[in-house]
Amino acid sequence: MFKTLRSRLWLGYSLLILVVLGAFFVGLAITLNRSSVLYRQVVLQMRLVEQTLVRKIEQEPSNPIKAINTSLIDRPVAENMRVLILDNRGNPLFDSHSDTDVPIKWVTLVGIRRTEDLNNSLFVTDTNQKAWIYIGRRLTATNQYLVIASPRGNLTLKIMLSDPMIRLIIRVLVFALIVSLVMAAFMDHWLAEPLRKMAKTAKSLGLEKHTPIPLEGAQEVKELAKSLNEMSRQVRESQQSQRDFVSDVSHELKTPLTSIQGFSNAILDGTASGEISIKHAAHVISTESERMLRLVLDLLTLTRLEGGVENLEKKSMDLAILVKNIVEKLSLTAAQGKVRLNSTVQNIPLVLADADRITQALTNLIENGIKYTPEDGMVTMSGDVVQRMVRIHITDTGIGIDPEELPKIFNRFYQVDKSRKGGPSKSEGLGLPIARQIARAHGGDILVKSEKGHGTCFTLLLPLPEQKTKAAEENQK
Image 1: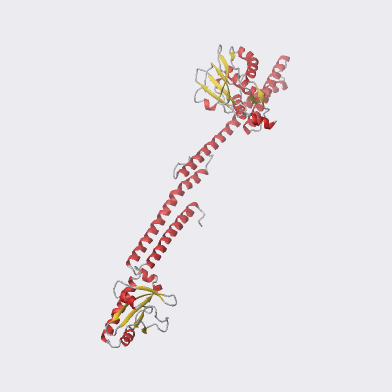
Image 2 (image 1 turned 30 degrees about the horizontal axis):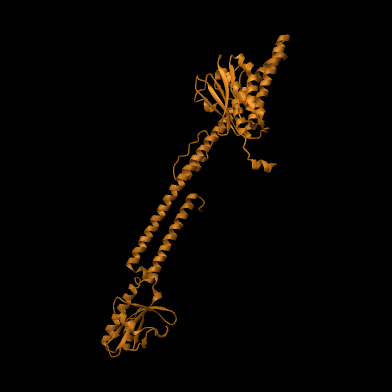
């Protein structure tokens, strides 16, 4: 019971409403109890008793006590009602409760005269600290006083409920309570329903038929729904990425394995019988084996970089010299494709980085530029510093990249130009992902700008080392 959010919300609202209305009712009861409103019924009853007794006394004015006794026998008053006769000094001559209550010594003649007005009554406390409400009247025939008293604490719930105004207030409170409970149930449904839908939809996270959670309800609920939708999208993308990864790895390994198997069988079954044929088969097997090894090593490197477990040997290095060495190393490759290499990187501040990994990243970027630049094209390297980030730009005059392809080029095995697949120079599609992960492992990144038919510009970002103050250097010494 009350295990669901809806039931707990309803219980919480209901208890809050009951506490508020209960406090209001108690406060109202206390206020009315201290006012004269609730005593109208009691005073009215005492006035009726008073009028009855006065008429009886007027029939036998010489002996009012006898007349009262006769009247009380013939027509008893309420059990809690007390009738007294006082002399002109206020001493009690008759008390209908003389055997049960303390003597009446607390009623003053002045007070009695004040209560002769039909609208007045007085409250007093006897010697036992018992509160009373009383009215009185002077009996002119005998110069005595008639007093009718009732315990103040006798205002029971029944008397309170007999008042029309109190009954109206109670009806209003009951109606307000019912309306409040209905509204609490509605609010509970209004608040919990989006969460219920969200829980139901969340069970299908990652499934193909997953339906996005509707953005409805309070702002916090909308934010939660938005976060779950984003998480669902990431889960589906991750699952799709895993499927693509398995498919791509299988595809990339299938071709070299098929070649290795085919030429191995050719050697074994004698199809490749001559020396030249055997050497050719062995060369293909060796080439494809190297390609498989390179693929596995690249995947291992990429996985370690993405997982943050790659150990980087960071040292202070000059990127201008590094770029110059890479250009010299790739000059033959560029010349074979009739592509010119031009480096203007100079006067670049030293950076703290792993030289081998940065060389690998820049080599991948420059080779990518050479690969997709047509004959008589150019790949240019330039550098600058912006906001404490060293930027190395690799700009080519190649075929460019479609805008819809740009977000995907750093995905594993993704290749923009599908027509370039095949052949000995085929790329596995891991160069750009590895280059970006190397940059990010150094606290930098790789950005790309491209326009179809107008070339591409990759920008390698590396942070400058933190500047140490002289005071810090002295402390280290």
